[in-house]
Amino acid sequence: MKRLLAIFIDHRLLKNFSRSFYRGAPCNHVPVCRWPIANTMDSTAGRSTTPSKRTARTNTHKNGHYGTHRRWETVGGGSSKKGSSPSRDRYEFTLMNYNILAQDLLDSHAALYGLHDPEALPWEQRSKRLLAEINTILPDILCLQELQETHADSFCGGLKRNYSMLYKKRTGTDKTDGCALFYRRDLFDLVTHHKVEFHQPKVNKLNRENVAIIAKLALKANPRAKLVISTTHLLYNPRRQDVRLAQVQVLLAELDRLAYSGTMPNGIPQYEPVILCGDFNLQPFSAPYELLTKGFLRYDRLDSRSLRPPGARNGHVDYVGKCFLPPALGITDKCQHNALRDREKTHPDQVPPSHMTKLHHSNHQQEKSSGPGKNVTGGSPKKEQNSRGEFSSGSLCHQFVFNSAYRHYGPNEEERRQATTFQDEWITVDYMLYTPFRSVAECVRQLPNWNLELLQAYSLPTVKQCSEQIRCIPNKLYGSDHFSLAARFLLTVPREE
Image (cartoon, rainbow, N blue to C red; front, top):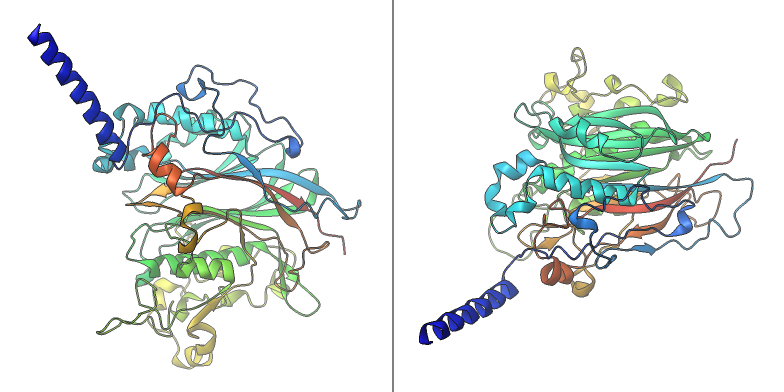
């Protein structure tokens, strides 16, 4: 009897210890009975979004508590529907962005997932949860990061809609993952696209193998309705914010090249609607974020690598200085290609080819003598002196008006702060930015200028929810170490001239 009592006491102590330990642990296994992905979508999208063949056999669909952490939230004011001209064509579409965690990266950094449920980590299990989530959202356009090259075709085959795929692997010989962009064949035609390589020979701030994809799409129902989509995965290294800013500057120049659609009578450039999304590996209100969302950044008095103001600390501060990217790269401080200043004359009504720029690209058959691999550290002193203000002004700006599909909260609103991943703490590094206006001179919320409107966003969990309820990802509900982003947009076709 005493022995049975001792066993019972030991069991109760062990059970209580387990409860108290996991209550305070940094991460835990999420119970299988919690599936936070909504099984239906709001009817405002104009079509039923419930999957025709629900994957009922998977654990992720066994419970009815939908929308626990994620739900569709209406954010648009509906101004485009009220009072807009009936002659203007308008189209709704859904875009989804997801860093799905390449299996090779998970396996090579296994120590980061030591406290995770080991049964939730194999690709065979994770891919089912990833596809179940994507096939629930049923996006018209899907952007992925960390899609492993060996998984690309099979993953595409698991999607329930008929997509065309653009894929770009990271450029390093030892890299096995990259970015992918999927678009529905029955809705869109591909006008043109470019696969951006951020690695540039002999440029210290551009010596990493990150990539991006930019695609210009046209609606089959109305070819005048064009849309430029871009997805990217920027450098992770937390100490090299300067590298991420340089990558953003290159990407903005390439977006300027592909999205440009002419000028207004006053000479201000106009652009097709742009949606830029991906894993930027930077937090809200950092220097690259400020450039993207505000259109301007003064960098010359920032710390050279962290791009933070020096503050009140004592000692030597290494400032960025006036010169950020070398002039020989041909990208001005307005985030435009200097070689395309006459594109109205040389390439009217078409996108100038990538080889006209000075950017190195592995697809180019041969480097031009003026390319960055040849003279990035040299060049004509007279020419560089004449263009010094254009390339070395100490500040950066661009011509796009980017809004975020998700609201980002500062330190004074900690309880409302949302997260997209865990990096020592729950933070936001994934973004979906869009341009509501065709030009910086048309920032008025009325037609005909209002051409891309955000209608709904798929809400993210708060930091508190992540810490107390979700704990660690991937798990038996979420297939990646990032949360997906999704939004519904209304595209208005511009008036004919």
